[in-house]
Image (tube, rainbow, N blue to C red; front, side, top):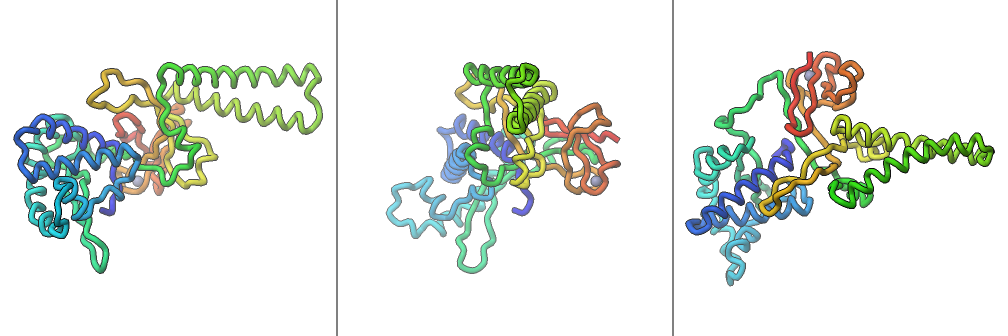
Amino acid sequence: MSESQDIQELRNVLLVAKKYFKDNRNTLKMAERLLSEMVDKSFEFIKHDIDIPDIRFTHEELFQLVWPKAKSPDKAPSTIRNYRPQLIDLLEDDSSLSQFMIKSGCEYLLDFNTDDVKGGAKTTHGLILKSSAQIQTHKASNVVSYKVVRLPKPTWWMKSLMKIELEGRNSFWFIFVAVLCVLSIALVPYFVFKGSASGLSAGLLLGVIIVVASSLLYKIYDLMERGVSKSPDIFTPFRIRNLFFVTTRKPKDESEATRPKVIELLAFEGRCGSCGDDLFIEKSREFKGRYVGRCAIAPQEHVFSFDHITKTGKCLR
Ligand SMILES: [Zn+2]
């Protein structure tokens, strides 16, 4: 599995598969039960922020999912190997599960992936996304799609910013920070004119307040105006290329009826529709302050729009 996968898309597809197994829970055969357990467990892993390459199962782990009380786990490798062809069949494009996913509007289908291991490493299995010819998409060469990739090792303070649900008290804090920024900027000239803030350190402090408050205010404005705002430079030591705060809605879950607005910190990845090179997403003066995806090797010619909700972009040239 060399190409990176869209973690949001995998989450959606797994959720649809969960629904399929729930609807058919009374008629599931053994292989289907195994797959259903695998779907549930993979979904749990994503919920706990585990990255796709790590959502793998050994023979023993898969065996445990269906036969947790089995007395002879040494049967696990042969049992799983026997079920493997059936599992692959269940995920064929024309299987009833895949057809259900297509009808439910999934952009991708699931695939059963087994590692080819050499040497002492254990064979692992996992569920990954595959594209299907049966899914009619508008993917021509002048259209690109973006993927959301997981942040490598976010620090605790980054984690606290990764998902802010704008509900009740949180939206209050959001407005509070904005007002605080305006106030602190407004108060700087007051202190300067009053003469109470003089000297180098006072000037420096006021300067820092202005810079921090105005950049924070600008981020909030950007988010409200465009729904997207590039993460501040202090995040770049993590070497994440396209890191953005975006406004989205909470993902659909079985239980919830209302979906509050959420501010999320997401890393995007895109490939140029003309040549296949990396896309850099940046704000463009030429396109009236919109965020656009520019090709790394032909930034003037290969330019695409950037829609963080549909995760697609159209050719702008
Ligand atoms: Zn290009």
